[in-house]
Length: 213
Image (cartoon, rainbow, N blue to C red):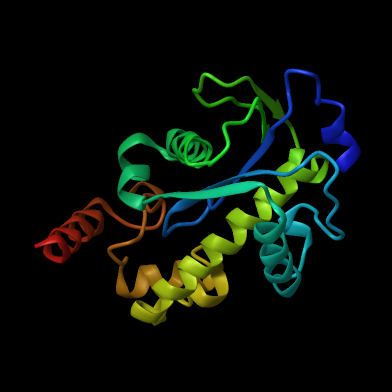
């Protein structure tokens, strides 16, 4: 995977940022993106697409990545923004924020997927980049671990949804709980239209307003 990244280094490209996201599919919580830059010859054994790693392995690599990286950043875009601008735009926004918050400005960005986000830095989208690029794979681990931790914390306030185990994804158990007791204030209302009636979604809006007040 490191060899994949090395082919992009040139005289004018010394800092390459890998970027990836976690949480596009869940019914609740934020979408999280991470950006990370390593020195050219850094090696970290075991770095791979976060989806192919156990939770224990991801947690271990997370600590190694943040200790080894030249700079890294993680950004979260909350469910309210996801509902307002849609999940694709929210994901692009999270990626841009993660890159903008890096302490070193990259010369090139390698991003997982087939889309670019708006930036003045050259961006190369790489389909299945989290299984090809070392830096993208590392970013995928940072994003996944960060989001999982956020969902575990939210589970303390909303234990009925079992986010400590399903992380907000639409498991059968999660869907059934929503149908039975309704959504929480941190559910994505635009993701619930196949589960809930318009009246139930209006009730969801009322709940959110009460929390804000």
